[in-house]
Length: 192
Length: 134
Image 1: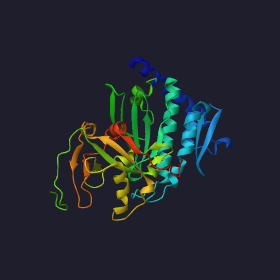
Image 2: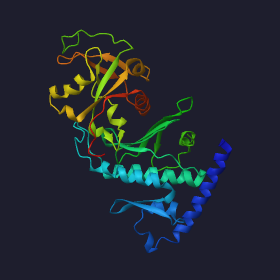
Image 3: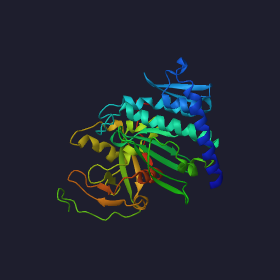
Image 4: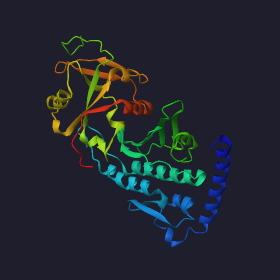
């Protein structure tokens, strides 16, 4: 996909998002939405065939069924929040529920954004406990590796590194609120 | 000699290997938690030089730590010294201590990039038992 196409897609995505926002405003008092985190209304308002993953009593993630593998991975990773102080016998700290929510919330929104904007189903990353209460999203694939470190809450600047094991390398930081990180596409669109 | 050791500090050849113990719980849902394995403890990432250790010795050494631990909970990975030195900013330094002549620190910041590159060069010498979280 060339740069111009990506720009066009980005514009399309912006328009579509705006459309969904308008659509959702009219639905905001609908009882059927009450258990779903409000940000997901914006992204999923026009879908019906979805998975709902309960993260806490008042935080749910909803994913279209095409994200079956990702939904399973998120479900499996929920045990991160059960890890207590010194869970590895090496003095590692436990994980705040808010940090875990930051991680899976970013991941779900990012996957949906890529799907909506580019029709690309991203590979499913590993969701791993990391240093000082942070959480890693790690894509270890044949053609590329990408590591995004989600900081412990309330910190909200993620660090990342990725490369295609050849010449393409990306490294930096980004605020978790901006899930529309087109920069990762140079790796995530790298078919096996 | 280092200040707390009576062992001579040596230059580690690039063909040699470093052994590092890994607690079974660092295998999370079947995957190595690279963010927790490839990190510094104080001066650097603590490893053992293959000249004076074996994977078994590295595993059993946890019994002799200040706070003794059960070796049965640990596995051991190995990394080639040249491959470690090829990773940005990583310095392999023999830092023997009284109870462990093999002790070697891998100094240098463990950034996201460094962790990814470490994840490409390690191999299992002894796999840990299956952890509770799968």
